[in-house]
View 1 (cartoon, one colour):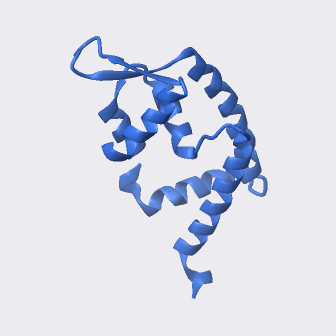
View 2 (cartoon, rainbow, N blue to C red):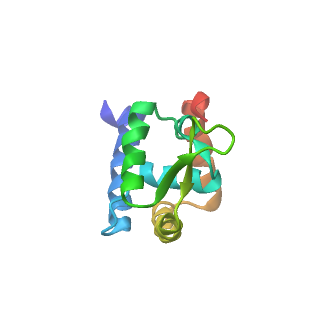
Length: 138
């Protein structure tokens, strides 16, 4: 039965992808989720935590510990928003921006390994097919 289950194949792929991602990061302990948060904060300086949670599709109880890790490492800073001082905005620190540049290079290599056996068209088709499984999450 397992070879016919889409979820089974997705789980096997996820395990392999996460293992390769971890190996790609070397001594830097960064999960795909933390990497994603850094990318979103970089693209949206001053983003509110609730907006980041929505963009990353995380609930607040999952987001806060992840942000705590990023802040402890000195990669992200929480500062009062210029528009509403009751709300914290998020910014990459200089150290965070420098680390993210390194991580992006590692992730690019990781992605090339993942897609090694796929043509550019097949890679794009796979992304589109995966997006059709739960379109409401896009």
